[in-house]
Image (cartoon, rainbow, N blue to C red; front, side, top):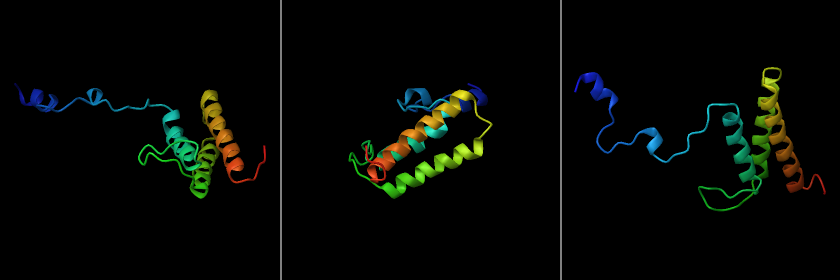
Length: 108
């Protein structure tokens, strides 16, 4: 085996990235938005925290995550594809409505 082949081949017992069973997110716009969206859902108490296996609320933290997505929207205005803009706006609308319900700002 040449030195180059040795560098490229995985060590004994070492798994290739696609064999680890870990989810690799696609390299697209949604991969930037989705972590903030998911964390906001967790902090709103709408999703179980996968690390703690509990459901809890932290409305201040949820608001901060929503504000970060709003800032992201503001800073990317005019530079997004229509489907990216729709995706971001849909995430924000859902999060804002949920926040207003949880914070008793909006009574539905």
